[in-house]
Length: 545
Ligand code: HEM
Ligand SMILES: *[C@@H]1O[C@H](CO)[C@@H](O)[C@H](O)[C@H]1NC(C)=O
Ligand SMILES: *[C@@H]1O[C@H](CO)[C@@H](O)[C@H](O)[C@H]1NC(C)=O
Image 1 (tube, rainbow, N blue to C red):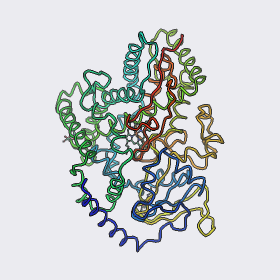
Image 2 (cartoon, rainbow, N blue to C red; image 1 turned 90 degrees about the horizontal axis):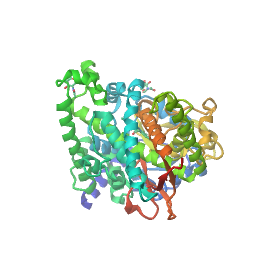
Image 3 (cartoon, rainbow, N blue to C red; image 1 turned 45 degrees about the horizontal axis):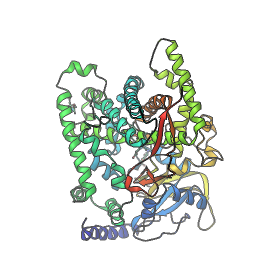
Image 4 (cartoon, helix red, strand yellow; image 1 turned 90 degrees about the vertical axis):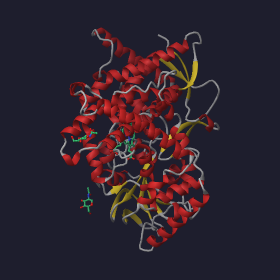
């Protein structure tokens, strides 16, 4: 990208911010790490940290649950792992804490005007139309699909094991393709052919390594450039995506591909076509079209928005799930006894299914504490320790007071039990930090110990947060992940099949898995080899009978 342009944006931004900050009091009484640079604040340090979460952990130790960091251009950021503060911002304030413009703009480049980038009342409209697609019976109806794709992956690996007895591969890459196939079919009855080497769709290929390529280890100029978006008028922002950088080109290409597919799907499946077929089909898109046609005029979605919904589901729903699954398998490889215990439990459950004359698990089997006690605990514990969403920023829409569960000490030694904030204040909730709090998770919060998972006493927590078991990995409140149950059932189906069939071990060559920072997210990397892209290698063999 042209340096002059960047410099121009930066200059405009800085002047703007300096003018604005005259009127502010802010959060300067809170302690926090000294700023390494006026221009970057801690933004660069956070984006470029070697191991996701390491700065968060260090700061928690030093300053308590809530502290002050610096954003770009000398701004203050309120960073917190405090359950009550996070509950207030994400769960109790409606839309009074909104998304950060710079981050949301990146989403909009990718997805178009869909649910993830919609704000305020407009978001409510999207969410309402989406809601029926995630109802309990609807999710149950997806189970056979999850199982079918899990079987397909399993057959593929079995095939590769014939003769060799053992293979070593980046499980995340295959799982990512499997979960893409799942979301394609679930969302709009579309086959991405992601698991078929020969016929992979262009979209499937377009996703390869996307997050690592876009967001991992960004050049400092890009960090500053993006930070400047928060201060630019929307009219100017609209032009930015046409800048000829590699990243934007990649995102726009994928977005164009998607819109082409989307339009085709809409014309093949849209409201005017084949009403009867639509009434019977169960993919999310059909449900959206149905919900749209019955909703009142104000709450309808137009074609662009519906296409954006498809993209949003694909983006939000596949890599998140596959990366989490990969970390579950990784932890199972590191904990062979637990893996064996889980396998035994799955086999016992399978025996019961066969005894009743069936062959596939039903959701009751996955839900009940028969099949999945261990699988559920392993998934929950992995979501806690390796959250794919490291944390999220929000911006106060109006002046407010944020309460704290754990008081902190101010720069002048006073006890702070609540933090008054001005409109425009950025609050960053560190999910990965919160999920290491010993008072919530126990003294061994830094280790993977699934047996803790079902024993968390939610009623004893300082503040209940999130959608499930006090986890924040799916965020919380009005904008919490709409697909968390979908994802959970999908993970149980995959674990049921894969752990029953295969033994997962660490690679023979000693390598270290690094949790690389990619935007607000995390990607698994092999330490020292970022050029491999998102990679989590494991050794796979057939589990002994
Ligand atoms: C382990 C898997 C998953 C994780 C960790 C995860 C995490 C998250 C998080 C943190 C958010 C909030 C984003 C923000 O506010 O900026 C979110 C939103 C969302 N997720 Fe997920 N997600 C997962 C799986 C899924 C699946 C499977 C689907 C769809 C089938 C999905 C669909 C969505 C959608 C549509 C949103 C936007 C919701 C809104 O803004 O109202 N997610 N997810
Ligand atoms: C958001 O702010 C408005 C205006 O101050 C207030 O009336 C409303 O109660 C707030 N919403 C929530 C959910 O706190
Ligand atoms: C939503 O419904 C309206 C009114 O029936 C219709 O004009 C519009 O095309 C629908 N949108 C989609 C994407 O089906």
